[in-house]
Amino acid sequence: MGKLTAKEVQRAKPGVYIDGKGLLLRVKNDNAKSWVLRVQYDGRRRDIGLGSTDILTLAEAREKSAALRKVALTGGDPIAERDKNKTKVPTFAEAMQRTHDELGKGWGDKTGAQFLSSLTTHALPTLGKHKVDMIETEHVTAALARIWNEKPQIARKVRHRINQVLAFSKSRGWRTSPVPLAKEITDGLAKQPESKGFRAMPYKELPAYIAAELAKADSPARLAVLFTIFTAARSGEVRFAEWRQIDREDREWKRPGEIMKNGKPHTITLNDAALAILDRAAALFGTEGLIFPSLRGKVLSNAALGKMLRDSGRTETVHGFRSTFRDWAAERMPNVPYAVAEMALAHTVGDATERAYLRTDLRAHRRALMDAWTAYAAPALSSGVDNVVALHG
Image (cartoon, rainbow, N blue to C red; front, side):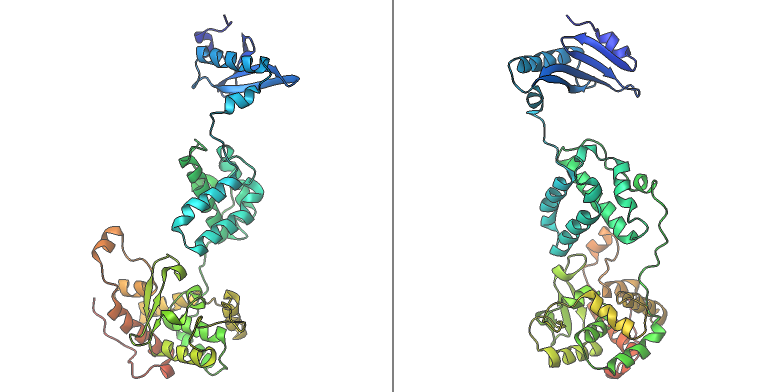
């Protein structure tokens, strides 16, 4: 019979208590209580954790220790015996790959690649070898500290992706602790500088800029920048645009989900200026494959488009032209419904309930808005379109 009683276990203060036959009760300073079996195995003493008193009663701890002690006495491995029915907890690096393999079934190729790339670069050096059940808030904070202020946008994405891995791990039973809250993580990090967004060209300066660019020799990057402006598209969508997506008869660019940020197909209406740029591209590169291929026939880099702006003495970003368009629409087209301008940018409009009832994509209204946009920005390429177009909600 052991020395401890159930009441003694319940009332035990911090310290180590001997029950007998190698069974110990260990009480930490925070009053956490756990059972430990001390045995001789493989020529040396081993302390084997059996579990907390919340999981095992005194009687159950004695029964489990007796079984493991018997394994050790017969030359077996008591630790392997204890763990044989346990779920194997992966490291963060292993859980990251398994999260990608499963959740990535619903992602685009670009999203999946960015998920792995960002975590491999910024999370694995700190978290990679940690078991996911041992990762706490302070570990995530430490992983982000190196880039939190230097690369704030990337750091926020990495924080979200780390928590995706931990949430997936919790759903698989690899960890029981809650996923750290974003605020808990950032409480231990310096305040990030206020985001100023992408630098955008004031819309009043745009017509002169475009006129100057149109006077220069055509190149893949220059035409891609102009097409980006005239369609208010994201530069990545333009860089990956292909001729098979263009419907000249209906004057539309039917963009597939794989090149869209949200993964959903979206149709852009093509105004006169956008069609004129397509004509120039066709004359230079033909009408097969990529619309704006690099000189080597590959997809243009984002840096190539940015260089066009820098070569013109501008400090803005290509993505900023979307803000230029939105500012113009707000100030020069005040009668245009909010949803029309937002849909032109391929933004999600309204909440889930509103979207369930709004089945139209307002294409006719968007076409009028985009025609007015290039009549303002590139009048030389726009035929007979007034700068003020009546749009009714």
